[in-house]
Length: 509
Image (tube, rainbow, N blue to C red; front, side, top):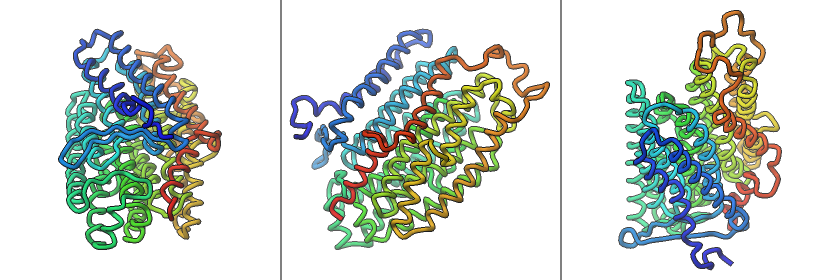
């Protein structure tokens, strides 16, 4: 029995959007001083979204689905659908939105423009949820462009010349990518009609690939080129490090929940649910995509080595780490696809931990550079421990979630007859270790000396750690990253859901 057979449940996808859209709109009308009401709206919306996702997990993982559609253009519907892949991305967005909301409330305490910030923050999450739920290409593009517009004010929030410049760079890159994506979707719709996301690919694309293979290749390149900007694939990755002028909660949102994830999620949709992996492989477009992802992995890790600013080092790490998703889904095979899809979740958990901790170092001790972190583990041991968990996971050391992703990707590469993928993963892990282990060493093993870098910081100098509203989200994210690795084979784990999604993509092959 499909969930859509039950009366009223087809509106659940709309309700998932409303839990962030309605609070976001209301927050715009609040004064900055109305802290309690704004907090209630933020937290209640985030908790409601998580609650809805939790209720949906058992039936959706079991293979059921929910769908809402409404006429939009002649012959084209707006479609919102909850199925396994959308649930995985939706669950990540909902969980990390709740954590980031709590973190941002403490982080921005007393700062100006809080109602504006949290209004756009909620709109950003609404757009991300819409991307997750989009059931066809047109619906996807609408929310994809909405995400660009909702995120721009967050990057520019501080209003400094650096923030404005970073936000403009972000806007130029992402709007350009959005235009290219829109052109690809319009061209494809003109050629074959409205394309709905289907496990294994849409039938119209199989016919187009057979009758007009060059045309099908050209459209594929256009779609991937448009998505590559937010996915931070080289050479269109440049906006990401420059956007690090944004507050720490925004950086966490960009890297772990929203923008870069929207890009790679779109690539998953195009390869596996639009063209289908068999058609894409026949067209010869997957190997070039895998090579581009591999080059981005090495490139991002190499540049991260030379960054002393902690957030910029983490930004180049994201350029590298997010491309694991693209690499996994561009290699033919259930195991590699599983590794790529599960890394959507695993990278989000680990990277949001790292950005939360970077924000705590900056806000509590005024430290922004790697070279300033000596002895901080003695001053902020819980924060340093959470950062260490995230860093070890990024390197790919067990039992943190990152090990599971890399293991699946390596096995998938061997299974597909591409041993070079194992070499890429090993090289990347060595580079990850080269830029993360020195930070861990500085945190725990270097003496801060008689004049520690944080000397003279007055705001929280008496505290050993940041306030609970800032510290708990970082610790919770680190624990989730650890549990996702330790309990990888448990029912309803991200790995199990990713495996089911991958198996459905290859069901008829």
